[in-house]
Length: 227
Image 1 (cartoon, rainbow, N blue to C red):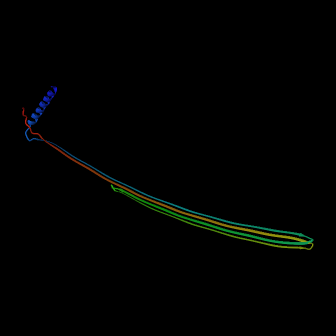
Image 2: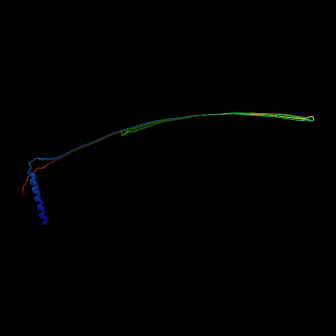
Image 3: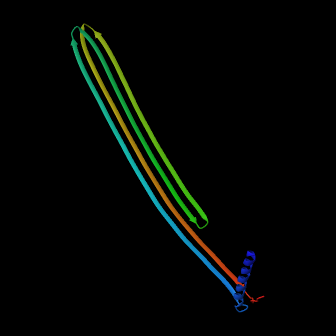
């Protein structure tokens, strides 16, 4: 019984709705249209340029000159005379000559050149180009000259005469000559050149377009008839 009552109530509600729709004029269209147009545009242009030019120059010129001239002369003249007639003669002549000539020349020529050229471009295509040109030149010119001239001369002349007369004569002549000539030349020429050229370009173009067209047509036609 309660189910039959619920069914009767549903039928009554449906009849009321049909009567409401039928009260409208015939062939009347009920429509809904939704039009949505969304456009998003982004334009981003970024350019970065860096230019760095560094030049370093060092010049060292060092010259050292030493000159030593040493002369030593000793002269001993000793005479002793004794009578019982003894004659002794000694002659000693010693000459020592030393000549030392040292020349040292050093030449350092160092050149270092670095060139960095980096270009980066992004446009939804990425091109990266790196150019690195490094030149290193080192020139070492070392000259060493040593000249040693040593002359030693010894002369011994000994005469001994005894005749019951004694005469002693000593003659000593010593000459020492030293000549030292030292020249040192150092030349350092260092050049460093660095060139950095960096260009970065970014181009980003984003376009988003959304078009949504929704149409919902509805048509109702009816009459209310009671049984």
